[in-house]
Amino acid sequence: MPAIEILGFEKTYMVGFWRKRPKCALSPLHLTVRDGEIFGFLGPNGAGKTTTLKLLMGLVFPTAGSARLLGQEWTDPRVKAQIGFLPEQPYFYDHLTAHELLNYYAQLSGVPGKERSRRVEAMLQRVGLPEVKGVQLRKFSKGMLQRVGIAQAILHDPKLVFFDEPMSGLDPMGRREVRDLMEQLKHEGKTVFFSTHILSDAEALCDRVAIIHKGELRGVGAVEDLTSSVQGKVEVIWQGTQVPTSMKALGAECHVTGDTVRAIISESQQDAAIDALRRERLRLISIVPVRTSLEAYFVEKLQRAETTAGRMA
Image (cartoon, rainbow, N blue to C red; front, top):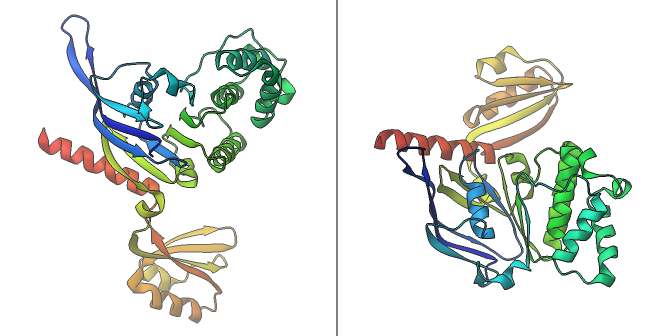
C-alpha cells in the first residue's frame, strides 16, 4: 500500500485587487510515494512545493483532485493522528520553554500522561536540545527553533512525516544531524516526505525524488537512475601540482586542489591522457566516468521547461 497517493491535485488562486484573475499554483498533480521511503520534493522557490504540502495537510483546499494518505482519504480525521508536519516557517509561543512547548504538543497529540514527560525528554535529546530545555523560545536561534519544530513533528510517533524545507537555517553540523534523523526514521519503518531546494541533501538522502516547476511535475524517479547516465567524459586525477602541456592540448579542464590535479577530458582522449602522464612520470590516482549529478538533471529539466514555455508563448 502506498503511503501517499496524490490524485490530480490542482490549485488555482484569484489574485489582484481590482480585477481579480486566476493564477494556477498547481497543475493537476499525480504522484505516488511508497511506504517506508525517503522522498524528496524538489523545486525552486515558488514552484508549488509548499502548496502541495498545505493541500495534503488540509490547510488549504484543492480546486480539483484528491489524495490518499496511508490508504485513507486525506481529509479523514483518523489519518491526522498518524502524520507529523513541520511547516517551512513554524511559529511557536515565544515565552514558552522548549520543554513546555513539546509538553503542550504532546497533550494535543494525545500522548498518555504517564508517558508524556519521558517522550518529551527523549525528543529533546534526539534533536540535540537537552541543555536548553528550560530556555524560552524567544532566545533561540533560527536553527534551534527548526530543531524544536522537528521534535514536535515526530513527538507522537507518526507513521508518515512531512518536512517543508527542514534544513532551513541550520549550519552544516545541524544539517548532518537532521539527515541522520531522517535516516533513523526510515529505519524505524516511517515514510518521510520532504521538500527542499538544497539538492546535495536530496542526493545524499532520498530513495526517490520528484521535480516540480511552476506548478507542474517535471520528473520523478530514483536518484541513482536519474544520475546514472554518463556524459561521455572522464575525470583523471593524478599526484602533484604539474599540468603537462600535452594534457592541455587534449582540451582538459584542469583544477589543482592541494597536492592533486583533477582533469575532465573526453572519454575518447583517455588513452592519450594516460600516455601524457606516463611520459611526465606523474602518478595516476584514478580515472572515473563523469556521471550526471542531481543538480545537472534538475537544471536540465528547468531549462527544458522554460524553453518549451517560450515556444508556446
